[in-house]
Length: 524
Image (tube, rainbow, N blue to C red; front, side, top):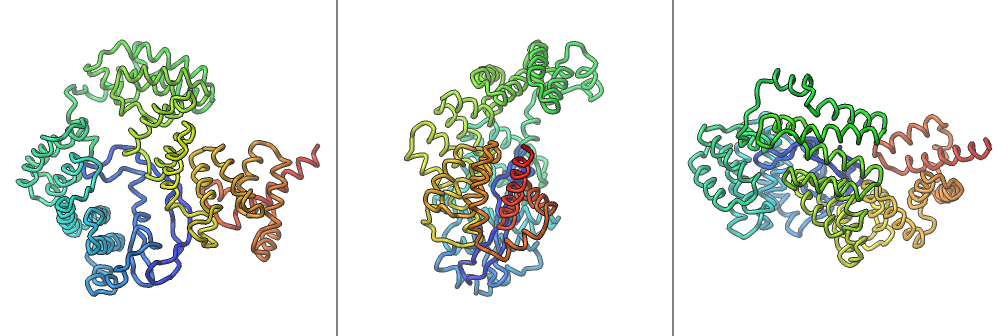
C-alpha cells in the first residue's frame, strides 16, 4: 500500500508555489526487475520521484532545493528542447531534464538513475526507441559515475547487474557477456548470482525484453514441478497435505480473529509439512504456495506478535531459520518481537537486512531511530530520526511555511512518521513536547486529542479538541465548517482515514468528535 499526502512546495528557482502529492511510504510486493525497477505498488509511484515547476520548467526530486548553477542551465536551449521533446512521454522528459542538470553539476550517478527512470517511463508507454535512447544515456552516465568513483547501487555486483541489463536491453550482447562474466567473478550474494547467470542465458538467446529477479530464481530451481492438475490434487485431495489446515488457519486469523484456533490449525499443518524433504518437488510446491515449514512458522510468529506473545514469536521465527535463508524469514513482526523482548541489537540487525528491498529510506531511518532510542543510544537515535524527517512535509510546512529550525515543526514531522508507523507512544511523546513549546498550536492539539479519543479518555480529548477549535487560525473557514452539518463532517473523517490531510479535515474531525462526546455525556 502507498500512503500519500498533498502539500505545497515553492520552486527554488522562480518562487512559484505548486501543490503536489508527497509519498509517505510505499512497498514492493514482488522482487524487482533485473534492472532493479521495483514491482507494484511502488512501481506506480514514479510520478512522485520527480517534480516539475509549471512556471520555469525546473525539474528535480525536490523543487524546493536548487544549486547556484540550476537557473542558468534551465534557461539553456538544450534544457528547453528536452523539456518539450515529443519523442518522450512528459514524465520521461522531466526525468531527462533532471538528469541533464545532475550531469552539469557533476552528479553522474544521480544523472544515470534519472535517465534510467526515463527509460522505464518509455517502457510503460511502449515507446521502444525512446526507451533505448534513455538506456544508452543511462549507460553512458553510469560509466562516467564509475570513472569518478561515484556509486550508483548498494553493492558492486548490483552495479554490474544494472550495466549488464542495460547492455542487453540495448542489443549490445558481446559487451554484455564480457561484463556479466566479470560480475559473476565478484558476486557474493546468491540472488545476484542467480540474476547474472540468468542474464547470461538471455544474452545467449539475444533476448532484449524485460525480465525479473523472480524469473532468475525460478530458473535456478533444479526440481521441476509436475503439471498443474497433479499439483492441485496433491495440495487439496491428499490427507497428508498441510494446505487445507493452512487455509482454515488463515480464515480463523483473518476473518474471525480466532487466534488460538488459527495457531492450532497451523500446528497440524506444520507437522504435515515437515514430512516432505527439501529438494523434492512436493517441498518446492509447498514453498511456492506459501505452505512450507518455514512459511507456516512465520505465519504463526505473526499471530503470536498480534497477541503480544513475543517470546514465543521469536522462538517460532528462529525455528523457521532452520528451514530457509534468513533473508526470506526477516519481516516486520519478527523485528517487533525482538524489540518487545529487549533484543534491540538483533532487531536493528534484522531491520538493516530488510531495508534494501522493503522499506523507503525515510521509513528505514525512522524505525532505526526508534530502535536506537529504546536501546538507550540517544545520540544515534536523534541522527537517524533527523535523516528520516528531512524531506517530510508537515501541516505547518504545507500551509504556513516556517524556518527549518522550528522545533515544533520538527516534532510534528516526527509525530506524522510515528502515526504512519503505528508508533503511538512515540507520537504521543513528540506531540506532548510540541504542546509544551506551543500550547495553542491547532494541529498539535487535534492530533493529541485524537490519541486520547482513541484511548477513550474523553475528558482530555474534549479539552484538546476545544482548544484546537478556539485557536483555529481561519475564522471564516471555521464558520463555514460549522454550517456544513454532521454528514459532511463524517465525510471529512472518512477522507482523513484515506490519508488526506488539510486544515478543513482536521477542523471537521475535531468538531465531529466534540459532538459525539457531548452526545455520549448526554446519554449517561
